[in-house]
Image 1: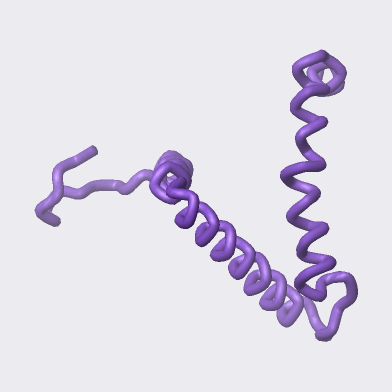
Image 2: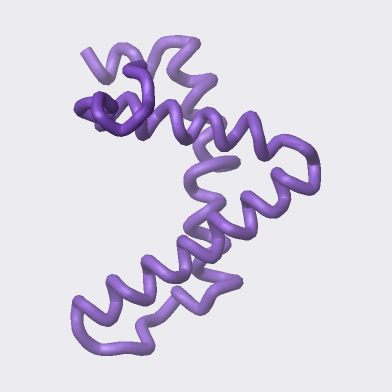
Length: 99
């Protein structure tokens, strides 16, 4: 079923955008942030390096959004995604109304 969706005209159109979005991030990490080769040893150190690198890349992206005036839209989208994944249990007793 997934293959049928991917080979449909809509699936091909979405897949064509992958090189401009998802793969571009990893290419930038390799070229601009020294992630072509490992410079550290150990899984924990590599996880730390990767986390910091992608956090820095996200901060740079948010700075560009802010400069363009798109930060509020992007921030509200991100909050919506995380809120949907793990909504708060209850606001009762905290002076906040339930959502």
